[in-house]
Length: 163
Length: 216
Image (tube, rainbow over all chains, first blue to last red; front, side, top):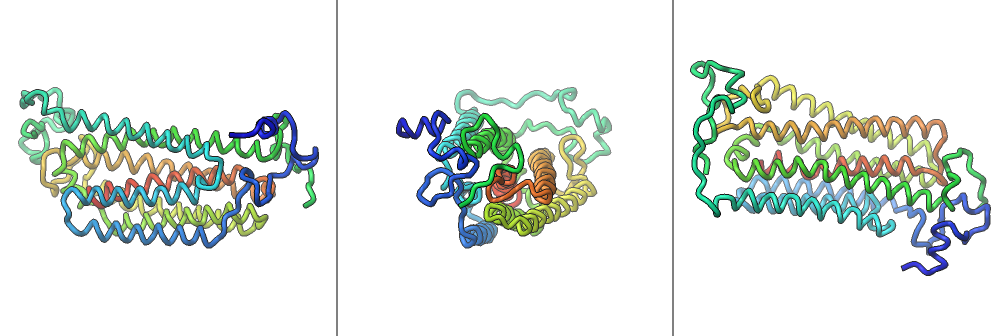
């Protein structure tokens, strides 16, 4: 929480600087707001970490782990994305309100995909799914190649057998 | 340090109390825009999840049709371009404008490399008939409806490629403005916002690469 003085100065009611200094970004080291110039080594280090993680995820993907391949790949991708957000996009050092906005985006994306997946993965539990009858007019690629005898095997096949 | 009044009007607009407040407001707006971008791509990630959940075999068989080497190369290119972008902003923060323009140009070049590789991948798939929906004519992938994978592939990478092009336009504009001496250690907000956009493009690719090329 900002002090009353801090709020007044932030929203321009009073100026903590002289009239001239209002043109300058707050560069003092102790200031929590203002510019924060990060060392070059940090950027290079994060870049190398991202390359190493890329090599790791490519290597692990060659080992068949069943469903855990997806889990491992997503965990590594999340670590990489957080490295980019926190250091390249300065989320770690900037005003923490930006972190709230970023978190909101991720949270709502999570809700969106998770609720959709509840429906997609559990649909068969409630009622028995039956194969749908063949409806040629409903299959868009049927019209493009009306002669099904000469085209290849995937044309005109509706997914009646799945599930 | 000596403070000079701003050279350009936009360095401190009248309705801001000081430069820090102006800069933080601009970044706040950019973060809200990035939030909409995350949700924009989120729709496609959700479509990917639905199609993959109902056709896991197709996604596994069809992802082998993608070239893993080119995909990995493009990932490395985008990560390097993110590093050059971050270093470009740092250079301008330190008033090294020429170095900043150099790193921005490097970022632009790496983005172009990414698009050239993407062009060769796309033209190869167009040639083989690995196309979305009713245009799919390839016969080398087992399973029912393998065109589903390519519908998802072209939607996601196509939208990402459009973002790369938009990023390249923004970076070119920043190079032009930096060469006109619009930026300095005192004022560099547009470069910083362009950098944030570019890092988001990189972040989206970080998720696209394993989902499409690695685990199919």
